[in-house]
Image 1 (spheres, rainbow, N blue to C red):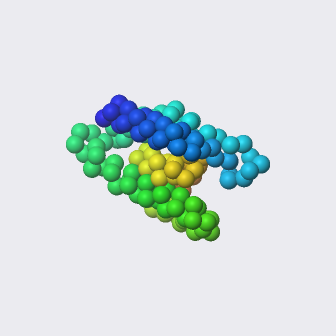
Image 2: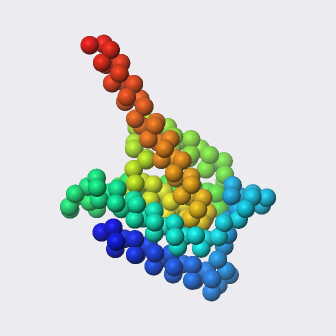
Image 3: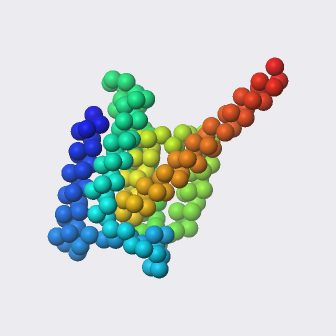
Length: 167
C-alpha cells in the first residue's frame, strides 16, 4: 500500500505542477505570508509530498494490520483533510481570524484526540497544500504533531502518576 500511495501522490503532484506550469506558472509562497520573507516554490512538492506520504503510510501500516488498515486510517485522514481545507478556505477568503480560532480549537481538541497520528498529519498537509504550497504545511504539521503528542499524553501521564501516588 505504501508504495502505491506514494506513487499516486507523486503523479498527482507532478500533474498539478505541470498544469500550473503550462498555465500561469508554478506559484511560490512567502513564509508567514509576508513579502519580506523568502518565497518557496511549489516545485518542492515533488519531493516533500511523496516523502511525507511514504513516512506516514509506513507509520499507518505499522499501526494497523490487514483489512483494518483503510478503515482504521480513513477517519483520521479525512478529519485532518477537512480541517486543513477549512483553514485554507478561510485564509484564502481573507478570514485569518477564523483560522486563529480553528488553530486554538485544535490545541484544545488535542487534549482528547490524538491529532499527532500520521494519517491526521497527512490529511492536514494535503488540505493546506493547495492554498499554502507544500513546505509551510509540512512545517506547521510537524510542530502541531509534537504539540499534539504532548497535549494528548501529558495529562494521561500526570493522571497515572497521581493514581500511583494514591496507592
